Image (cartoon, rainbow, N blue to C red; front, side, top):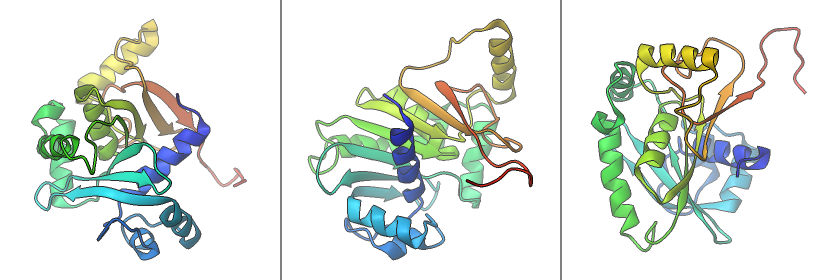
Length: 224
């Protein structure tokens, strides 16, 4: 079940997925660099709490996913990296914008192959359920994982695009007007910033339960 603490935890995992990890022990430098861009205090606490069970990054398509595990044991958490404004990621975004199904997206195809291997690996995900989270393009891929794997119990999407490109936008509008909710999947939590122009998160028909997060919009709003 989603609550503010769970949403915050999954958001932090989604941010950490932008890091590149050399081994299972996470270092502060791996989280404060150009990837995850955590503050030193946030990175220190995260490194003290979490380890990397597995990470996969494909140099051709740009897809990258990390399985995190709490150091004190417990459930596994899959987090998928979003767009990094490189040619390979922008190609995947272009495929998404053209309303091509996720199963034809090369990033998702490779992610499936790796996830299938992890589900057969006793050191990663064999015999375990997991949650999946991602920001932006990573959230789109997280939704595809939730739809494709029974082991994925919950999905947390952060400013993620929907499906169906402009046709999806039309469907979203009609859904709001007529009070329809025929594409809201169970245990998919779609968290979106309340302000600004939704260049990515405004694309397509939004999946799951939509949750608006208040963000700073103008100079007359205080940070608290």
